[in-house]
Length: 251
Image (cartoon, rainbow, N blue to C red; front, side):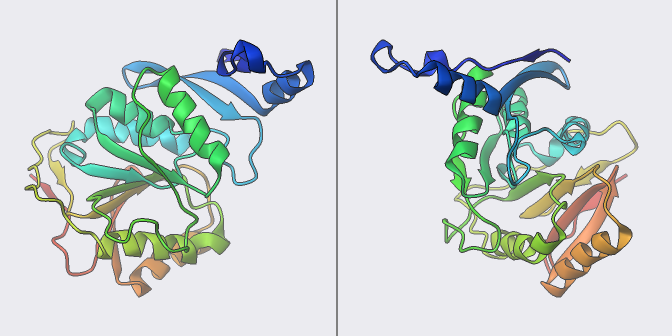
């Protein structure tokens, strides 16, 4: 994979050129890598290090992108927010491929937001809306209107499960639909059926290895919070408030 060190000189005017030391420090903080997504190549600037692992693209991102391409009916017409966006690569892919109405979100860190904005511009799309939110804290939007929440590889920190579930539960149970009718899924997957998601829904995928006990801890926590978890294939899970219309597979 080709690796290019980011040069920050284009971010400054001639009257505000950083010192050699500043340039060296910035180059050490970031790397730019080319990543293959279904049907396209994206150039993504990544942190060389980030205390909350917002620095790299994890395997779940690519696997989830493949799954969404095969089940594009799940995202067509949806207003979407991504949790734990990191570099913003998945959101950029979905916006670039399907013009998806998507908002990124991650830990309350200006560097993360700025880096996602940089990656949007680098890949020639408008900067997507971003929300700085630490899981478990009060959500900035008291009337969330995202009918689809997505995430990949976000189950690393077991101690954060309760906070993550609190955020997911709020977004699902406090959902306020906009004045528009849901778009019926129309795409077909490559198998026998069509996956149909409820409104709202949390769709997540991961490929990072976690213990069965940790996995059960998250799922049991969801159930205690009044959420139903359903495995819908290829380590992709749909989570919805209990009592909502269930996701199903039409045959």
